[in-house]
Length: 364
Ligand code: MRU
Image 1 (cartoon, rainbow, N blue to C red):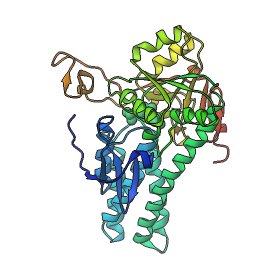
Image 2: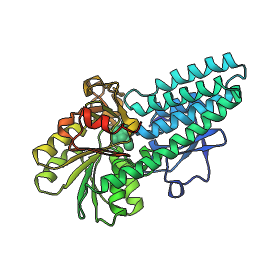
Image 3: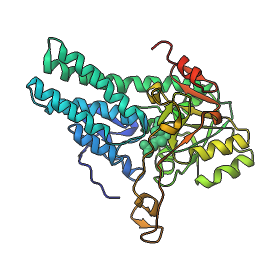
Image 4: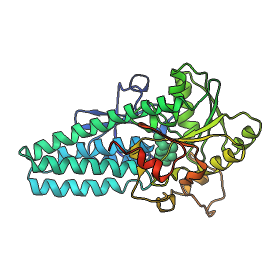
């Protein structure tokens, strides 16, 4: 794998201690380089918005909520390097937000976090404290977004645990774990919530071709914690369901439309179809920051197309003829009709629908 994004290696940080893929370190963002897992645990320091945007684009950090946390911290870090003159500061911040927004297209948490930082910036700059106050406010907001995300994941875990029976075999796809969030995870938050509630849970992790988030990340994260996890190739899910091996499917999401249609890692839709055929409950777990009520249905969710090389190669090894045509949508959309419940930090939409999604925002 070619490592292109900057990021000086940081000594001393440890996943075992932090259980989060990123942290704020005196004006810089330190992130666990997820491209190198499970082989190496390397943490890198990113000093401004442009470096963080490159790290998001290059998959140093990935997973919808984690991307949002990184973007918020990246803007806060960048603001420290921007000019002190207010008009120039404002222009530099606007450029930073545009650059950040171009890093990846599907996870709405990215745009949600940028919008939160834009609002904080505008309020602070309009006040008496000027540029210094805006810098401090951006930093406070970034830390709040990060901490809230962990709290939201824990709440998702508590709500989700009620849907998972003792002794359940939970199938998950991609990585919607602590690595993909501020910490604790969404789909894997449900697993953790059920384990913490004293339930015996076994997880089946789809390897998640082509980028292998399931094999590289979910298997790593769960096995290190002592949670029972069995790795399968994506094409094994149907056979396991047919044999009665899967009790429910729990996945995360990158963007949920107003009607409950959910975009998630490519392959999620196929699992939902299989689950419905075998009458197995299919659950989507995500914070409200993943819901995009400006988009009515999943048909309008932008789907990232990634480089063919991720399909034709595993690491540096070619597994397909050179020059072969490749189709590679990195996400798919599962229609709300195939989702039995949407679990978020304020409760469960069961089944998800426009009205049920609106009800989740009654306090907002
Ligand atoms: O391409 P990725 O690794 O960013 O895709 C991640 C996923 O699809 C996750 O399932 C989703 O972001 C939910 S993470 C809690």
